[in-house]
Image 1 (cartoon, helix red, strand yellow):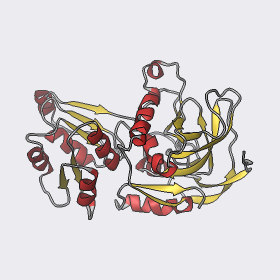
Image 2 (cartoon, rainbow, N blue to C red):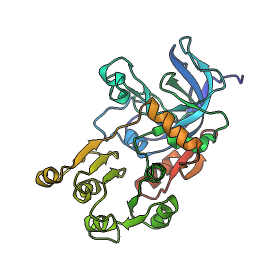
Image 3 (tube, rainbow, N blue to C red):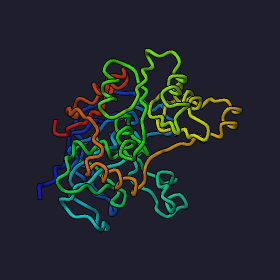
Image 4 (cartoon, rainbow, N blue to C red):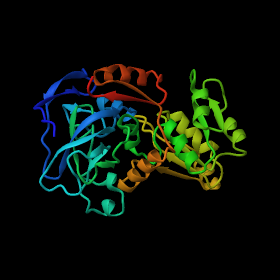
Length: 326
């Protein structure tokens, strides 16, 4: 077993919106119920951007190491940990830990637990070389898995970023219409398997375009964007008895739709926060069977500020994954 260093490289910030510092910090020690994971790769998503900015109505810990899509190897564990061994591959998820005994945990809604601990938000996350995770909530990754490619799978929203949403939907036998805008987005979406693509930068009537493409409106709309307008439009174009699923979390936004239309069409509007342990294992199984694969670009951990800049500019297709050794 490799010796665990006392210090490590990490990206940390002292205040929300403050400088993202790539520097040496102490390696954390796992609590009795925790694993210490040598993080090899970490995905980056919009939640990390929100955590840094502090623009959600939920306070982050400060200072904070962000990140919640970490994949690596177990190098140490607390004395109460069971069912794990040194050398196992493990994933760090958004949900780092919960009480496991409240009404929400008991029915699989662990992320809704009042004591939920969140990686890269209330618990230092995966933008560091060594991170801790509750042994019950950490994801078990099969030996031989490509850790860079599996990292983005670990977030496990009911549906994840657009690229993964398409693939999960296709794997479930659904027909998919993609809505996005910008150079190269249509070709990218078609490669992933969307049946129709609507470019919101070129089409002035998105509601009509979606209804035309789906013969009257889709049965469901999964909002993974951070556009309030897109969310509101989905309530208009979804067909009667359809379901609008809210996943993306644009800061300070609201859902606005006609009550009359919502009632007459009998639509459902529901939030989908994050998957539980069962969802995680199902997502990893989809990945292992080759049914989903997030297009990734690997860059060094030190390049996180540049990734955030590209994310703010809407220039990212797929997922950036950080190599913690760089």
